[in-house]
Length: 90
Image (spheres, rainbow, N blue to C red):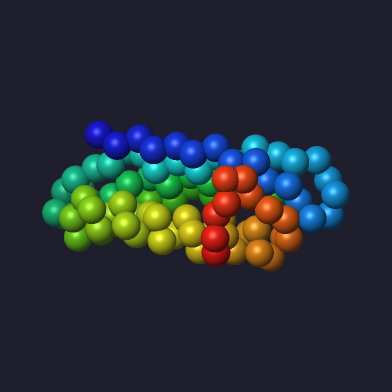
């Protein structure tokens, strides 16, 4: 159904080598309980994150995933220091 992937370059402020960060929303499902869910993957920071975000409908699940990504990835950039290109605001 939906597969959205954006690849960023993360340049840490500690001077270590830039690295690729991949953010993906995929595998949208209409679950048996009537809710919808999407898989969210944030790969390339010190730790990788893989979660499912649930919502009342398919759009709510995608909105929830976008909100989760902004908080998680934006928070990691803010906490670790550095920059993302293209920009991702916390």
